[in-house]
Each structure stands twice: as structure tokens, then as C-alpha cells.
Length: 229
Image (cartoon, rainbow, N blue to C red; front, top):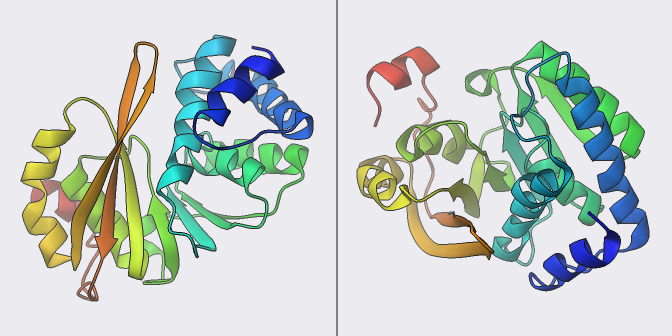
């Protein structure tokens, strides 16, 4: 993966990338592959695949950002997706990551240090996180089905803010099954943004919050799993 090619992809999203930012993605890739040898961070390790299916995929969310957004919460970030690539491109964005796995937090600490970026990293389950209705944007990638994801994320979205949910081909069924959850949590699906690159297809579900989420949410994950909204 070279700079002109990556730059061309991102230009299609109206996201200009400079050589310094590209070098940061190279550092990210090297650390990801190195740490992946000793712990399970990703099944995708080929360079071009990482740049498309991790970096490009993460950055595609930027096109769905509200114009005045200044804060982002990434729930269960794992190897740093999607928030770390976004932070590389948008240095002024205040990014918080809540991740429950200690091993993955150690990786993220190393990554953040090597990239020299400012990210608030919290080792905790999201159900125990106290900062409700604080963030302009909340997102989570490959964490859960949409109705479960809505309960885990929407309580932390400001009124007027958005949950951005990257999803694959089965998103229509997930969306249909999530209408009660969205209504209960004070939100509504307002837009579906398609992301294409050759044979790679994803969508970003944009879910806007209109009213306060009841204070009892999110419930303990075991209860959510047993009785989803």
C-alpha cells in the first residue's frame, strides 16, 4: 500500500491525507501485525486488506459526522477501530475509548503512545461507564446486533447527537428488529450511508437521538443478552 493509492481512496470520501498521517497508518499497521502474533486482535493482516477493511472502513464514518461534533465515544474498540484512524485524521476531535479487555487496553496504550495522539482510554465495561448523554458521536464496530448495540451506546449520546453503526449486508433485518429499542431509547434511524470499494461493501446506519434515554439503561450485559429490547 503506497501513499498515492491510499490518498486516492480517501479523496473519494473528501478526506485529504498528508504524508505524516500516512506514516502514522504505517506505524499502526506494523504494531497491529506485531502484537497480533501474541494476542488475537484481528484476522485481517495482509497490508492492503488492513488499509481497506480497517483504516478506510473506519475513516468512512467521518462523512456521517454532525458538523459541530467535538466528542466521540468508541465502545469496545478492540484494536482501535474505528476511533484511532479517525483520531489520526481529526486531531482536534476529543476521543474516548471504553474497552473491557485488559490485553487490548495494553495494546491501545502502546499504540496511542507510538502515534503520539491524545485519547482517553478507559478499561471498563460500558454498562459501568457513568458519563451518560455526554458525547456528540458514539460508535462501536462488530460489538453486537443493532438492538443490543443501541442499548449499550445510546444512553451516552447527547440529545441531538448520533450513534453511528457500521453494518454489513444483513443490516435491513437488524434495523427492522431494532425499532422498539430505538424508540425506547429516544432515537430514530435517519440515514443509511453506503460504503463501497471494489468488492468491499458496508453501510453506516446513522441513528439520531431526540429525547433522553431512561436512566435504567444500559442494563447488565447478561440481562441484555437474555432479554434484548
